[in-house]
Length: 461
Image (cartoon, rainbow, N blue to C red; front, side, top):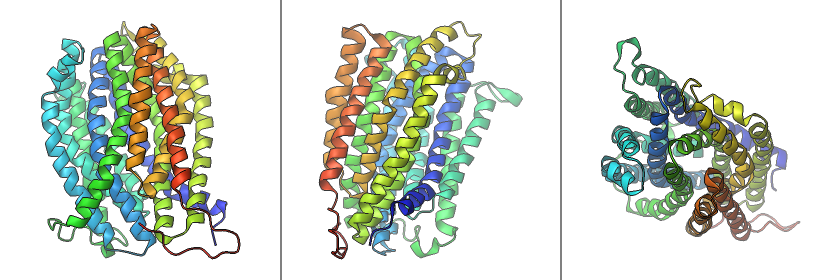
């Protein structure tokens, strides 16, 4: 018999709140970079917006392997299997290491790539300086994602929160020392922020690895047993699930990265305003992302246990929680968008007023797209719990590349709406994705058990 909705709400909150907190702490790394660099110079702020968008796009692609491991570990837990979690996480880490090594040359060669994308010479050079250093952090960042997925699927989410908080605190401290040259340290500006991000990612990796090895109840999973042993079956499954997940994430981040490039073509002020508004919007989006990952675990466990009624109830409980957050964040953005944007700027900077005026308008637009953004990320979480990744990838690509980016180009440039038109195009892309993905979930989710009929056995996985 399916558990009642209050049970699913409680379980989702218990699992999801630490994940939400960890994502907020993770986004705090970007926010503190933006705030501190905004007080350093508008040029450094613009370069960091471009560089971070580039780094994050590749990070999301590589994170697909970790998210694949989360789906498989959750499914295994639903079936009472304690061996697959170790095997899946180990092979996800293999893929992650290979990916991090393979993409580093892209960071080294980023300056000419930015120039080809019509970014200014100074902007391209500064962004490349950041990426050459921050690119080193791709490896610990992806390993951290594998460990996060493993522990989250096992419902050990509090340690994920504490590890991310430790990383965020370290990032603030190293930023303060190296961006501005405090306490006798060299004043590195943008490069100092890149160094801080590498230290932050490495810290999170160490904390999570120690817990996964020595934490309460973790000995049964023996995560680090035979880490070099190949596992062709799980290596293949991780790839088949992970690449579509990564490409789905890239499709969405490409929408925002494409917007950053368009803003860069408009000038430094629009790009700086875009960076501020995006950081504010990201702070609310990660709440939905944390709830979505909790839903992936809850749906995945119900899928492995063969409980379709609980599967659907877990999904709708997560949607209900997400919609509450949407209502609250929309109100905050509409009423206090300008005040939020002002936190990121040094008002003595000559460009500050122009950046603030535009950023405040973009934050209002971000309030509008909270709804569709929340729906699409929740639907993706449900589908990953069902290990359905290929069709969602195609739907995301169609939404963002077929609708969102073209709409931003037409509205922003052809119709002359500038920055507001670019963001309106992003809203259209997100709206299309939310509709397509939720319909997909309703079609592929196992049917409810008819009244009076016993629940079926484990679902095929």
